[in-house]
Amino acid sequence: MLPAVGAAAASLMTGLGALQGIYLGMLGFAKFIPESAQWWEKAMFFPPLMCWMAGLYQCLKVAKTEELTIYRHSPADIRQKLGDLAKEKQRELDLAFYWMLGGLMAAFLLVALRMKM
Image (tube, rainbow, N blue to C red; front, side):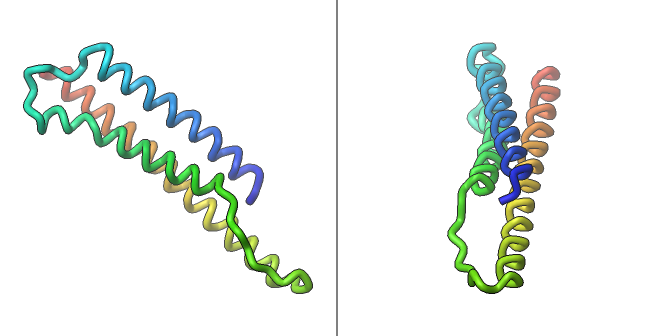
């Protein structure tokens, strides 16, 4: 794995954890969800958390090592497998980033809707 991709995944995990902590604190301690809300209205506040959990999962897939079967005496095989692995890890990192953005958009939408309640 490329060190830059691993470092980006670690940073993204830190950011996702902070987002989840702030959001859960806002929901729990600030009484952000009205107690008089129906169950389906309360359930609307969970999609950001689900998006961020999916993002964390993708980051963990980036950080997880994988066993590669390579032929030591074939530089072309090594280059191809490492290139494929780097592309896969980058794609997983991109997905984690998109999950984070989706969760942020959902959270901002919910905050805006809550302000109108």
